[in-house]
Length: 629
Image (cartoon, rainbow, N blue to C red; front, side, top):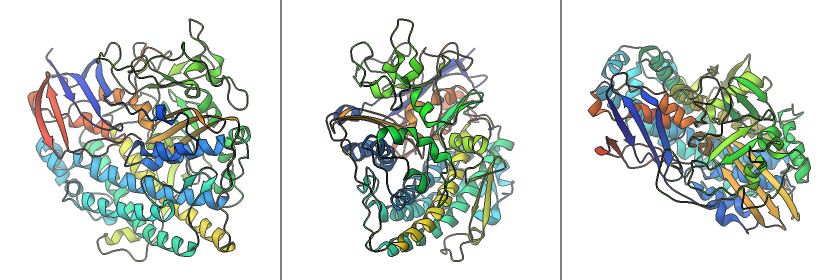
């Protein structure tokens, strides 16, 4: 058997740098014996320097984790603060939060990820060189939704993804400006929104009617653009599945194994959660109920393991969270620190009261009790090899497992398990994007007509299902924006002279908070321990923290691979076959990069590819991941 070791480093994504290495059989073109690894090569330390600050500071400090998606962390953090400081917004305040976030991060972020960061991997430039047979078929294949996006053939869509020149690439950059402008009307700035505060939002509504009007102006154009992008990616994905053997490329787990949480909460229900951290926590799952007025909650808390629904509870999702560092560059704190809390706010034992074989209570590994202690050392795939920690879920039966999160996961969750979500009908994501009577000249005429997006999320997370899920997630953001815009304007017009958005937060002597919120790349999770209005402990996980987590031996059950818990990134590498139509010594690694980028790419200016430990080539201006949420 002939094999090569293919290394892509850096593939920068997690607020710094991400590397990948895989040993590939040159005959089968598949990864050998699960020897596919991803590793994070940069330490940040935000959790360390949050200690001792006032809790609201976390909203604005954690947003600096990333220059692209800072609002993702700010929104998760502000929800942890809402809980810990006993204050939730008035309905109008929550509506403004939803409106801003639908634009920045969701619409803006997805447009860039799909067309500027992921798209070039499927562009004509790449397909012609590395996948010529697929390219030839694309030239002869008519696009099903050409009446919407205006591209006659699949090859035309691929050409539109060429960097700097392709229509989708260029106009995604143009459209994301509109999304950021709309968000800034409310946030004041992006990507670090200064207007987000515990208990509400500080948006100036002295010219509120103008604010809503300017927001709507941008939303109309973005609605038309969304139709183009969604239709184009649906056509491209269907083609690759049917003609290029790409259906199961980048598969993570053989059966759905993921989490999702709440996103785009009902303004009415969120504003009624309570005024103490205990009540807010206890009442969190009322967000899944039907609101009597205004928008309904779109995304819901869900835990699915090996294809089985375990829970639809925010509380269960929090209680079962663990974070280990067996394969990470950190010291284990469990035997050298004391817990901040052994229970959640309503008395449930964290980690279900489970213990390790040596008697150590697993609640020491719950994020409320975790302490970040860096332990840098040489990389060793048999020991420690990443700066990313190992988020895992536990259940009351004693099982522990890795999990995935992302747009595919949350859409799969509501489609299969939450039929009362406003974007679900008959087990499918069903979203009607309205008619736009006047569109800019640069958009195709077919994008003005009403279009109902229908998608049944497949039961496998693959490279293409993650990409299509991200595209359909734009429709969910557009729906949310229109829904909240109408409600927000009506609410504002009822009381223009003194609109209420925010409630004053408290300064309890002790409290805890958790924010588990759906962001572009999945569920962002923040945990706050407050002591005398000072942060005693703060931990947070971007969606990528779970997805890129290194493997460890803390796993039991049929979802383990040779007794190991393997994160979603590494599983996607292991289950990717090299499809490039060139000899092995010319492989670039596009299929691996496609799998990884389908989770959450951002921009970097060069990537170096190594084979057998030697630099094979350096590609300038290659679009690669960098972001951490």
